[in-house]
Length: 471
Image (cartoon, rainbow, N blue to C red; front, top):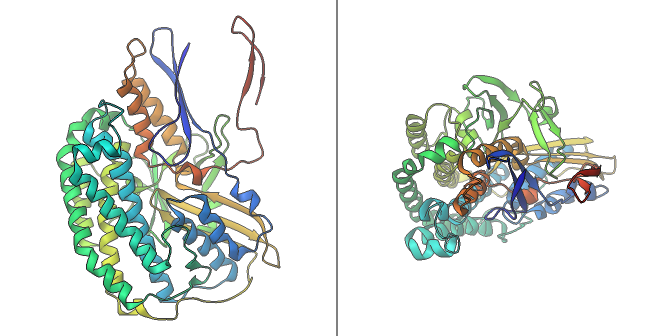
């Protein structure tokens, strides 16, 4: 048996490699998606005061710190048994929407567009953001401008673009200045125009990738996403809704504090990334997906007019339940548009400038769970504290973890379809990596150790026979 290794998988956040095993005829027999880094944030936060958790866990990742700040602060709200003031919640939602805009822009324009616009088989030396700038400077500028707009909103509200300390237990630590609101409103028309133009352009090219659409992670799975009481998509607060592969509702009432009854976490031998699964079905059959595509499959609608119109067209083009993971790109662009619409709606509310933005309290509960939708999918922070408020136990379930089993299956499907061991071409391997990129994984966020050895060491003799194995 021969082995092909893709190491590292490029244009993702974090570190991973893929092993592809070929049989004697050169056909793909199996694959392994290895997440090769470990962060261990749950363990080294033990003993820290609970109110430090937002700023500590935000350091997990420089791409989505706002997501961790929000999930962590919501867990701390539960420990204090308080609800932030209405304006504090709206400001949290506002910065959350800005996080979606900048993160989705980064994923689509900088990480995936080189494949989509230059081609999966294009010269790998040019198949990057620099090649994109050379080939399509207008599209490259759009990506920079949209990401900059989201980052500037975060900076205007929080005074920092990365790891802001503005989001805190009980709300936020300062109100929004009127001039910040006016500046964001002034920039919205240009951002909307770029989002509309990009989405319109993508719809003209997506059908060129039918082979990829048919083979990029199309195995039927369940889907999970947060919704409100009416079934509408929610990013900041709501209940987790599960649908099966045919679109039937499996569960629609999972609250944050009940997650352990619905979600189990399996440890994998060859990865530091755990594999969550839907507990009532069991492991490994209970595979589900989260993130932009899952949210569009699960929610009844966005609640904003332009995004709802695009959602209707998406379902008309792709079906009521979309299985192909290639369409994460399409879903991401629709969500980017929704984020801009939601920002405008929040800023139009006069109460957004109110100055009462934080509730204060100490430890009133010894346990708290916070759940939000991060750009990549459902994010859960679960903390336990002692009477003095020191962390005694913590668990984070991150979007890329939820998708781990689906990513592994998708890698195998893509490899088996595209790779010919008798005549290897770089574009074949790039498609395997592109399946991973479609999920926009954040591996720095998602990895943690559970005390077991996440590697295997083998001792082989001169003839290749295995003499011993550890792990």
